[in-house]
Image (cartoon, rainbow, N blue to C red):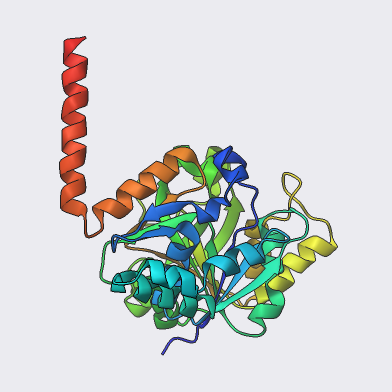
Amino acid sequence: MSEVKKAVITVAGRGTRQYPASSAVQKEMFPLVDRDGLAKPIIQIIGEEAVAGGVEELCIVTQPGEEDLYRQYFRRMSEDTLRAFRGKDWAILQSERLQEFGERLHFVAQEHPEGYGHAVLQSRDFVGDEPFLLLLGDHIYTTATDRPCAAQLIDLRETSGLPVMSAVQFTPSSLLHLYGTLKGKPMDGECGLSGVYVVEEIVEKPEEGYAASRLKTPGLPPNQFLCHFGMNVFTPLIFEAIQYHVDNDIRERGEIQLTNAQEYMRKELLKPGQYGACTIQGKRYDTGIPYGLMESQIALALAGKHRGQIVEAIARLLAEQLHSIAER
């Protein structure tokens, strides 16, 4: 049984890239149709990813005053609403599941927007002395196996015996300006694990030249690097690392960055060889930008119960577009 029973999801961002919709609804509450055919807010899809990995309690890091908005959603129907749904057993079942999910939730506010690392620090009391799964509040995932992406990460952490494990994906050098990047030493020869690495350096959004000279991981294709996938399993040492940056006002682009704290933890707080990274059999999608939101819905649809209808619809739309172009 997994020892990772807690998860932290950060949703304290302002959602400026999704304006004007984000001025009416928190971007984590934007609806998507999930793989099971049900329309759900993004935060529920992310939370269910964590629960499918064995997590029992979740802490949502919010903007001040937003807890009630989430609490109002994650609860069963009122008696008046139940009457309106009489005969719709599937909806009543989902209502009960919302209540069960809501009972797993804890909330903490990030009073000031001082960066991702600062947001994670707010969950310190919730985590206590346990390992925990950290997820972004605007990334969703599809898996290429029968195991969800978060479950794969937790499995590989436990199989490898490494206390800290970051999920990574192969990323071309042209995209390094978007991601934290890790240099790793493959563990294949040590324990037979494929796609697991001991991390030797972590840099936030490196320049291509620096990455080429310092961050190449053996065995990767040319111009490919290990970049963050958007989920990590940490021990509470990450909070000591973030607190060090807060106490010493160490910032990047004016904010307390998580990536910098990860590197400090790796070098100064963990024993050599204790920080791991692993590739995940799946894809991530960024719902925090308009294009990414559209791509996320398409990916969920193609991985879900309505795949056949969606493929037909896409084929029809593409044919119409091609016909329209041909007539011009």
